[in-house]
Structures are given as C-alpha cells and as structure tokens.
Image (cartoon, rainbow, N blue to C red; front, side, top):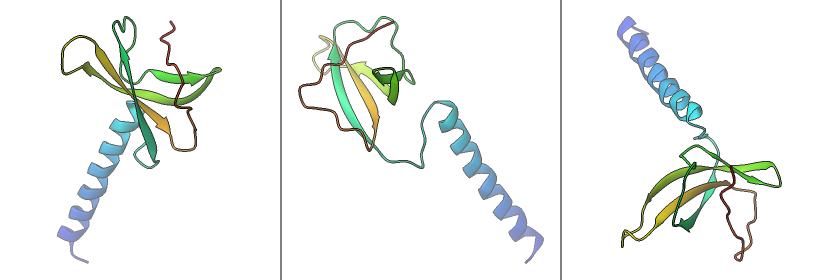
Length: 97
C-alpha cells in the first residue's frame, strides 16, 4: 500500500470521527435509529435543541429542532424519540423546568 493511500484512508477516518464526535456532543447518536414526533406550543421559554425528553424521569429522546409553524402563529418542536419507545396517540408533551 502506498503512502498516498494510507494518508487518504487516515483522512477519511479522521473526518468520519469528527462528524460522529460533533453529533455525539450535540446529543445525537448517528448509529441508532429513532422516531420523530412533533409538538406545537405557543411559548417555549427555556426549551432548546438537545434538551432531554423524559417520561417519569427516564430519558427517551432529545429535542432535535424548534421552528415557527407555517402560519407564524406558534412554534413546532421536533422530538427525536428512541426507536423502542411506544408513545400513545393521546399523549401530552409538557414543558417543565
């Protein structure tokens, strides 16, 4: 194997580790699958992306994004929930500090 091939392989591995580490520090694991749920709020005072999503004190996911709805009348929160967690259709998401 030539030196150029070794350096190229090392560079690809280094970039992959950098991307994985950046996502890991943001609270996202790119190696696991998950479900996305959406909640609508009028006010999201202390909520931010990467905040934990808890059920009875147990973390089941994170907040992945917060953005305005299309009509600019409220905010929509995207929740990244772990794959094995079953959330009922009538579940209510409360913001608690």
